[in-house]
Amino acid sequence: MKLDNYNVQPPLAADASPPQDSLSDADTDAEDIFVPPLNFAMVDNGIFRSGFPNSANFGFLKSLRLRSVICLCPEPYPESTLEFLKANEIRLYQFGIDGCKEPFVNIPNDTIREALKVALDVKNHPLLIHCKRGKHRTGCLVGCIRRLQRWCLSSVFDEYQRFAGAKARVSDQRFIELFDISGLKHHPLSFSCSRK
Image 1: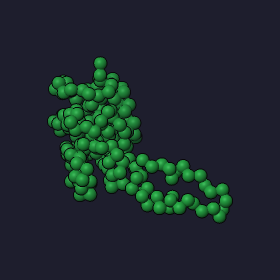
Image 2: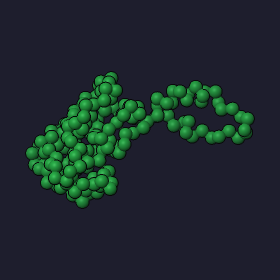
Image 3: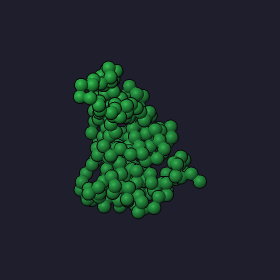
Image 4: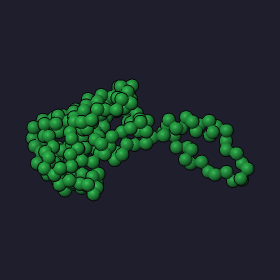
């Protein structure tokens, strides 16, 4: 990652010209600029979360050396993003969960369970989990991972609310609390905070 252009001191004299190589580097630095997707964060070693990535995020995503992406949106994946994934040998797992805002619409347990199995498999790491904005669907999946890590519910909800902001949903938090993790406990936990 190149940051040298951001640390350049302004010339002392008004007529001083910039060094010749900084002008030619400007074009190549454009491809080295790393822009993370909306709501990007590290969940744990090898697991990241975010909103839907776009072409401006490709350089950043490439730097993560991802093996897999879990998309929780039902919409078809954009062609340019599919090409990026293919060119970088990143496997796409798409679990279409509607981003419904209705308070009594159930989040599909089976879909979250299948997505968790992919997320827990270290062969898929490094892995990015995302939905449209990286708030609700991603927050539910990450919340279930936190439960498997034996986080207390208040900490799980604090993290969920940090990403969801003013749009936090009680129904999502209830889903996280009531989700049955017992069937997933046989999956090996390689998370940094779960080691004994």
